[in-house]
Amino acid sequence: MSSTAVATDYLALREVSVYYSIGKENILALDTVNLEIAKGETVCVVGPSGCGKTTILNLVAGFLFPSLGEISLAGERIDSPDADRAVVFQQDAVFPWLTVRKNLEYGPRRRRAFDADARGRVDHYLELMGLEGFADAYPKMLSGGMRKRVDVARAYVNDPEVVLLDEPFGAIDDMTKNHLQRELMRLSVEEPKTSIFITHDIEEAIYLGDRVVVMTPRPGKVKEVIDVGESRPRDLAWKTTTEFQEMRRHIQSSLGEM
Image (cartoon, rainbow, N blue to C red; front, side, top):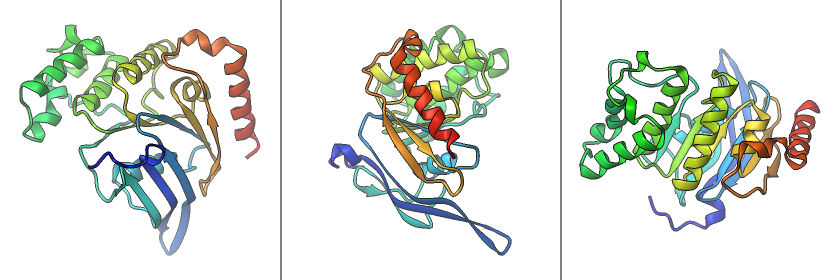
């Protein structure tokens, strides 16, 4: 895909609505969503359950199609899944019959693109994510946090333009979650990608996002978009600052008004 689109709307959802058919009834899941994301920007999406957060992610991934409106990347309409968009799911998506290294190699091998460059990227992300000592281990030998690192590393190995993360740390304890947030923050500085991060955790959204999108209950609409305004990298201690906590309270209040 071309990368010549205007930076402010590198990834764009324009007038996007989604209807689901349940029996004879059409249910409006997303209602006229407009969102523009710059290249290299991380946008975190928060909102109540059922508001369409994951629907947005699946639309951008090309797994679903809008009933109305259009989604584009670098000026080209998204109408199918593609290697330029990688997804990190909430549940473990590692292949249990493959070692950590083989999991990371899977994408390039599947695309018949496993060359010296791909092998180098595998080694790079094994080291970057602290997995080099577990390269020959099988997923059953790893903790939940380590398996999630494999998920994230496997997405980045394919060198996608866009990384889509659907509550990837939702089922992980707070200590491990904080560590993984730091790892993802480091990745966002060293290997910047255009990202959409879905979460229920307001503090996580503020810490990781350049902007936070607050969604209304179904039918999901964009209620407001908050500019975080803090430069990267960000230390976890920033979460204790007055500025951070005021932003958290604002988003919490916005969600509570629904």
